[in-house]
Length: 134
Image (cartoon, rainbow, N blue to C red; front, side):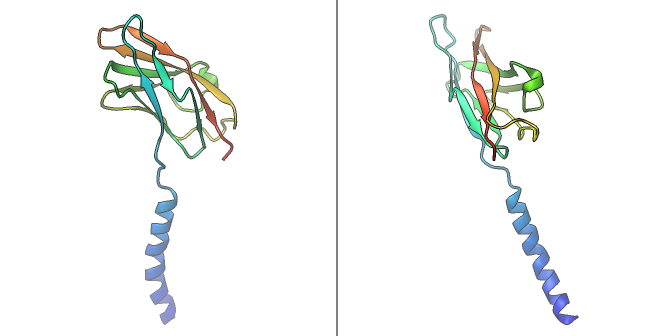
């Protein structure tokens, strides 16, 4: 009985620390938006195809400062592995939660990035997300 009372107070904190480490959120998969915000500009998203696992989330940022906001919208909402349309701005990136567990692996999910420029004009880009099997 004495051994049990010594092991339990030591084992419980160790297990809690190990358990917390296994559920820690991974660093986001980045998608960089390039807003052109002029008539002859060429807006872009890199990478055009973002591969991710079921344990990943994605963040869209526009580091140039030319865009005031951006919206990530699924082409087919019924086929979108995330909960909602996503919105971002210069202070807060558009970011997903983890993809739905039911989302099929190795399937491209089409979406559009709609950029709002400082002058109020908009630009649209058309990339994909692919969730791997792991």
